[in-house]
Image (cartoon, rainbow, N blue to C red; front, side):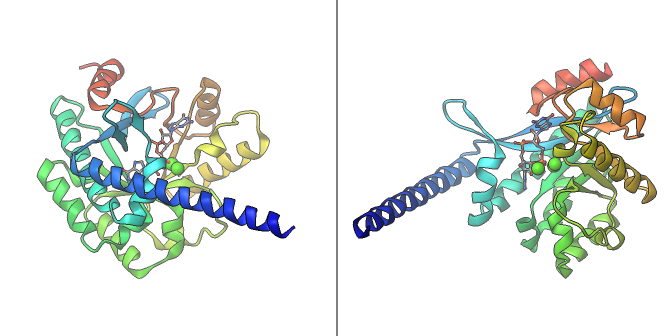
Length: 279
Ligand code: C2E
Ligand code: CA
Ligand code: CA
Ligand code: CA
């Protein structure tokens, strides 16, 4: 038994060691990718379900490896947060997305808004507000065409500096969305205290619509909540026409998901815009 125990320990230790070296290796490669500008911003449309027009875009970061392989943010945002690399990454995303929005506005798609994801860790950066404003001024886009998406967790934490940041954002006319809304939290009191402009219904509630009764109830409830609080509501992860029908019947008029488009590079988005809105 003793022998066994030691073996287990040994194995555990070995895999822990592997995890650590993997993590260090990933960290090194990510730092390099940031320096060498191997990151790219992809865009996914938010579509008005009635008219099927694109009303906004969400910026989603990608890491493009030398062999062309595309690495998604779920694989590197956590490590970027742990290492502080999230700051240069998000500065890049913000600047690039604002510049790109300006180009699309100049092409005539001037109603488009741009949403950018901000993680909780980023809110600890004291110059975030400055960076946001700098990106807007640099690109010369109207502040009201920019939206920041923050997950519910950030609103729950109720940290004074976060609260200040959110009010300051709204004072500048920038929109504020709660991302992944409805996941895991029971208190809704924060909706009273924060100057939120929209709710994004988490994909997990949308994916089994229209047949799943619980998800149907939850979605309906979130839509009602948004309506009563005078907030916009966006359904994430829309993949089928049946989901569109369900949402429209309940007065949720904006959707985002693979039914319309996956996140795609800017050039491809320009073509998609032509397809959807003409010009
Ligand atoms: P998110 O903000 O909730 O973004 C939505 C995610 O769902 C995206 O994954 C998108 O590709 C995926 N998605 C959209 N529609 C569908 C659909 O119909 N079906 C399915 N199965 N998936 C769909 P992605 O691009 O891998 O991003 C993952 C997360 O990484 C994002 O979740 C966001 O939290 C984070 N993220 C992405 N870009 C940034 C960034 O620039 N900064 C920060 N801080 N976080 C980012
Ligand atoms: Ca988001
Ligand atoms: Ca989301
Ligand atoms: Ca998410």
